[in-house]
Length: 178
Image 1 (cartoon, rainbow, N blue to C red):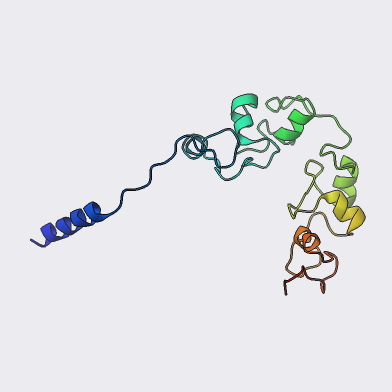
Image 2: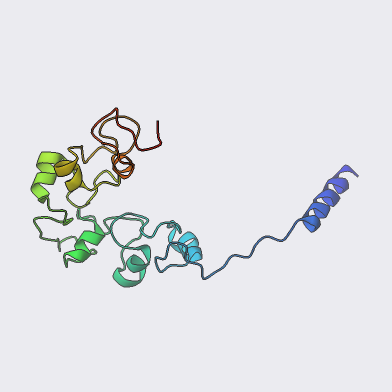
């Protein structure tokens, strides 16, 4: 008898619950050319990020145009991001076809200086993803392009610049922040 009461209670709960919202099959929240359903079910990519693997190519272009892997930033495992290879005319699926450029990310700092002098990533304009490009960190703000919070005050360098404070001064805070 007890089992029937539980079953009846569940049935009552299910009947009284509002219907679940329908999933809009064609929705593309991040505008990358793949529907949210495709991203989740077929490619296991993030439907809120245009470029899940942050290689410089939107997920949709990786799947439909270049046939690269949208979750692997370097589909041919040659040490170069897929987006860098495409931008410089090499094949992101051929490990023997490598881009040749003295400044792969186009930020005005040579690959050699990024790698050997600053320790930054020559394939990324913003090596530490703090919202402040490497060149600005090095030449204008005198911060570290490999640390999100160069002065250790708890605020990312890009956040400080946007908030009107000095990212190299630990006593400087973005406006309205303590």
